[in-house]
Image 1 (cartoon, rainbow, N blue to C red):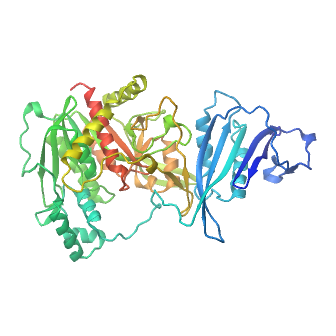
Image 2: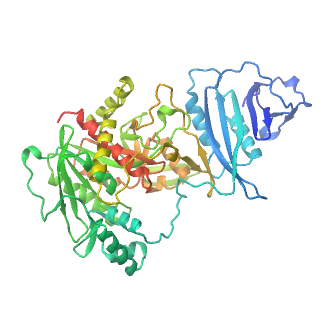
Length: 561
């Protein structure tokens, strides 16, 4: 704050259900203070002025440079009613076109809503806005803040995101049991395995397994249970594959719905399963995708345990050892998007797909955070970073991204997505996941601001010419690691430091194994199913998985075999 500037709060208008405020940076003419019309703050807040005049003199009202909109949920202490209040902040940046107004507004908003520092109440909220303008953001000349009461309800709004770090005891159900078996696939699970994971009674586990077996969803194998997969061939050893069918592309998935999504887009496919009693079963689906022969596998459940990381690494080594003509590898599936609050072009929303690439002066396509330390108040991320030597897959993804902006026709991946949905609908034989795109209003952009309190943020608005509400491709860095993504504030800092567009959870062992096996061409492809790490079991996960698989098929369709 210079001696020539002051930040002035002015009330523009007020009704019983709405208030509009102006926060304006003005020149400070020291001798012209009017104490009858102004409150002057002192001490560390010297330079903040609150106008007593109840009317704002509208002069040159130029359109704002950008805006951000969100909703808070206030509770009346006497009546217990919840009030949804919409808050809109409009930004003016001195008319300076060299300033990226959307980037400034996005950072301002993130500073405003820091967890445990964001005040919901009116006075605290306005004070926070004034303090941010007073302490920095010199390029912002004016804010207009509109607060509007939307609705009152006796019921608290439904949270769409999981409470950070919550570990709830989940009651047994056929759905939960099926998810557990699908996650472990191709490794069978015994009743004792399931009991150790969740503490459910053996009799309850057995009853639910029998119902799943009667429905044709699971089957017994070597004393355990595994997922029923149509047309799979159980083998003791992988058969010899004809030379012209040897895969040159490998696709790695971790969730069952991800494997289903990839397999549905593979032509002339065969699936081979080899069960073992040591937790190292394999499943390989071989066929054609685009111009290439491919093999798709599913890893058993990933995690931080030594057994899980070792099993994942070994699975990659076996895959590349079995199929030695593989030149390119995709890690495919659901992930968490990193939203942008003011710029639609940079906003990664649910249903979009991110292809890993270096970007924004970053040296890695994938950054895995091992742990986070706090050194003298500064957050420090300790990371492994990965980048391929060959970028053919990334170049193809960028070509797809560029073409869709310049050619007014349906994107190639959208065509494959529609084909995949049609095939899944025809082949569905049990209560498999719904792969259709969920309704747009289920894409809730919510943020925790401390405890269980949350705000709901309005998505950035697209240009009139870009009204496509379907899947978009983004190309840029991806990151992961539970230490960096389990907390909203740390996750936000991690994404900002490494310029991430998407996140996943525990794939360090997978990436390390790719590097250790001298794989020089690979890409992580994440369909966005939540705003965390893609691990939340929700209705977006199957669609996001199919969207990611469709982008891979589009990439393989424009690259030479």
